Length: 214
Image (cartoon, rainbow, N blue to C red; front, side, top):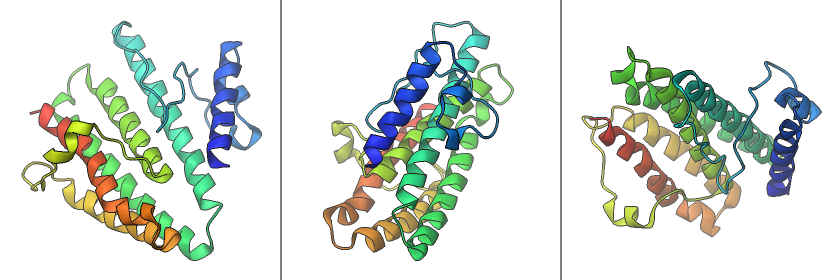
């Protein structure tokens, strides 16, 4: 049911905007509140929203493109979260909310750290939007139980020290709290047992991004 709702949601946005509608007009009524999003030109992917080709545009256009990607992934993440939450009893909703708060803290700190060296450059707003969008997609994958990783990543897993990434403690808090939620919700099912390793594989993308900025 959740995948069906998400597919409808994406189709409404994409087909609506192709006919010149603002995204706020294309959205279902329950999602029209707040500031209208820029017209999304991205498509729905398996784990989230595929990255648009922003590089070929001039600098201002590249920023708007990246910003749009971040906003659309954020909106889809909210929808997936609401779908999961709607299936839960109050104690599980509470545990999910705790994990989500930890994720938001990690996302903020990670993207600040990742883009710190670019803070006084024209590339900063683009890099910040791309980072937020990528992590929104990661969170969508977590909520859907999808492992986001490359096959060659698995043997490369290794502990990350605070010297390498000062957000590791925030990540570990999120991982603990979210896997606790999955354990409570799914019990002894395979998904809950695989939660730590599944999230660790996704974490490799964050680590690689940090290493590439050094």
